[in-house]
Image (cartoon, rainbow, N blue to C red; front, side):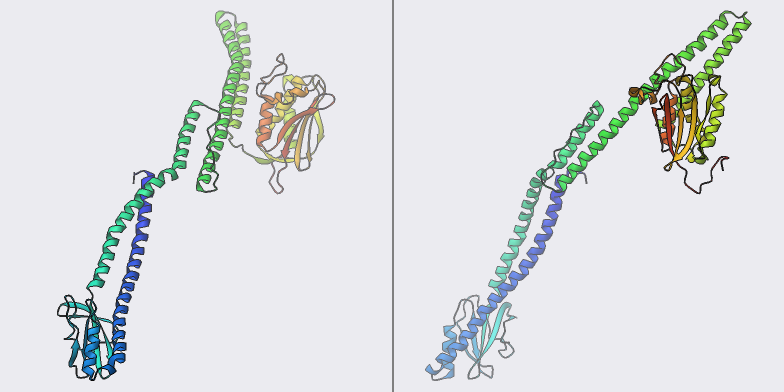
Length: 472
């Protein structure tokens, strides 16, 4: 049904009203018809009892029974009623004067008629008759046509037949009128939804709310639910805007970082092409191109790793020994040119099992060690692993100048570089924190006096897991 809701509500209200009215009218008609019949019969019985009382009182005033009966019958001449008396043989003793519309009782068996009113049809006439036994063997019949009773019932039925449809029409009209203000809160929600949609398209940070009604009813529940939906929508939109802004900044920073090595590659290639006879120069150019290509490859790998973390894509995890992984990362760092002539050694070291992705955790450890080699001065660098209160603690300490208090959180931002004269892309610490966070842990920096200590905390692997690694 495509009709407006207020019409459907009015129709539902009218149908319900019709059911109640018809059932009520049927019950009312039955009760009223029974009351009419009881009134009709009571009047008839009152006449019969009056005849019996009158005969008993006036009998002594008349010398014969027949004269007393005639007196009683003549006294009971009331409207359309007919009174007739019979003796014990069924012989008629007296009959009231026949008036137009009065019933004809002469062909009725007086002794077959009960002393309670019954319907009898004779000579095409429908009547109500009752018998009463008088002294001296007199049987008196009192009858009255049912026409007046039928007329009252007919008036009742016509009144109901005409009145009920009128009441239904009136009820339907009232339903339509009352449905409009009743649906006003629903219309307000629809209008607010349209306004909110326009605000979303405009990029408004705040969406319009509905004012909750004072009454604690269904309308209040609808309003609260709608406002709650807008709260969630605002939160989702704000999060999406943050993601979009982060993506724009990420792309801008990535483009900036890739532009320099790309320019170097282009410059070296142009120089080699400009002097094709210089074989040694061409080889040097190719070597520099290879170095820059390696830098770009590592940068792209780091960017992909960050993008994967932003997308909340799951990392593969398995039980492993973090101390084995740390020792492996230490050997890898010592082989790099940047570690030449530097003392990088193991500090406090204990077997510690964690649940994680080995390549990613190794990438995080290497990033912390590289950061210490680049920014931690020329002193000793220590790598430690130990369990502590249900967590695995991996620390990298240098003996440099430390990290200023105001920069201890900023250094974990992407492309953050406190000293732009030193090598690096500014992604290492951001990647290390991302890896720690995605493993259910954390990464922070603290003062080491002297130097700085980077502390990565990871959950201990559950007992009973099969652990990858050589530590017993």
